[in-house]
Image 1 (tube, helix red, strand yellow):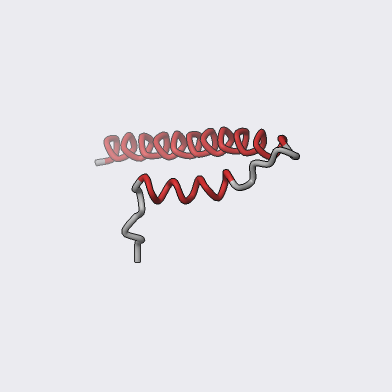
Image 2 (cartoon, rainbow, N blue to C red; image 1 turned 60 degrees about the vertical axis):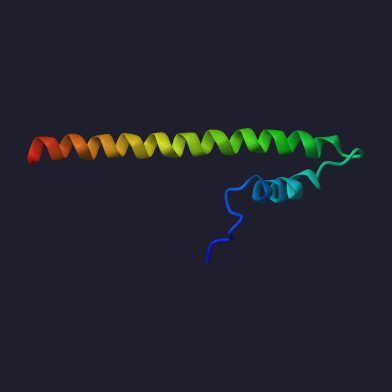
Length: 67
């Protein structure tokens, strides 16, 4: 069952609060790592979806050739 709040600003605020809790004055590298980790995650998702689009294009091309 999907949470009724899924996709809402409140849902994401609660998720981000978990990350923000890791930010510590005595360990600034945690906040830096949080930012770098977010950038890495975005890039990896982008690469994944680009690969998916490339594969879809290949299948469409093959379908057009064979059907």
